[in-house]
Image 1 (cartoon, rainbow over the protein chains, first blue to last red):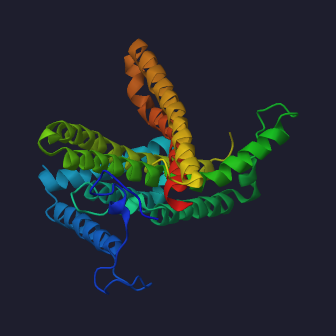
Image 2 (cartoon, rainbow over the protein chains, first blue to last red; image 1 turned 180 degrees about the vertical axis):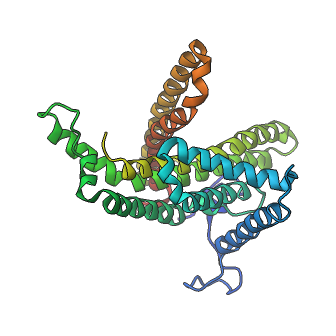
Amino acid sequence: MEKQSAFNIHPMDQFIIDPILTGDSLEWYSFTNQALWMLISLVSISFVFIYGSRKHQLVPGRLQSIAELMYFFIRDMIIDIAGQEGLRYFPYIFTLFILILFGNVLGLLPYSFTYTSHIAVTGFLALSVFIAVTIIGFVRNGLGFLSLFWISSAPLALRPILLIIEVISYFVRPVSHSIRLAGNMMAGHAVIKVFAGFAGALGLGAIAPIFAITAVYGLEMLVVVIQAYVFTILTCVYLNDALHPGH
Amino acid sequence: MVDGNLVEMGKLIGAGLACTGMGGAAIGVGHVVGNFLSGALRNPSAASGQTATMFIGIAFAEALGIFSFLVALLLMYAM
């Protein structure tokens, strides 16, 4: 169906996945713009952490400070929320944080592609967290992990109702975990493009939308970091539930 | 769009109605941060230890708004 639109660019066009090397057909082996931007983020992550940790200075330089700040930020978060034994899973949680943070921030570059705006990506991340946490819970606590759903501090009559609510909320976790990140990224980046569409339609009066883009862009810088933080902190909360299931 | 079809109109109205759910999420996030601030101003020394809890609360309140946004997007582009 052909739609008439005032925009000369569609705000959702930036989320289209297209193959770069193999022409127009989208096959399972196609090298898409998503793969390209994942590769770019991989290269920049490697750059920050390999060059940042190359010299091991006592007084850190700029790059080493960045790497150390991120490292200790996540380390303190895990200790605060999941306790000392959560540190065993530090590499996984740190990897999640860095992957999401770099995906979000690189997605703010003009003409770039935000791979965290796709539920296929965030859904996989959230599902792997969900499966890992469930397995850790059963391995560490055995069947005692099920006490997460049977709240012994509640009155006995209420417990079956709470059981149903807890089980539902447990299985909704990967859904909300993934959609929160993807939805925030999609909405935020689409808002910038909507204002960009206004600027294109207004011609010389575009000065107002351009100021608006600047403001929204500043807000987005905040949101992308907070969303990476929120995804990581919720992973820590779920991990804490698996390590200490008693309420 | 006088001659647009009825199904398209229903979709767009539905998408608009779904977006009202985001207002509820806005109220929720405002409550969380407002109550955090009113507590933090009474006891500023305890505030820094609770920012993580605040962000978790924001995330849970916000998720439901994102769900309604998702419903709006599905109505407009996927159905």
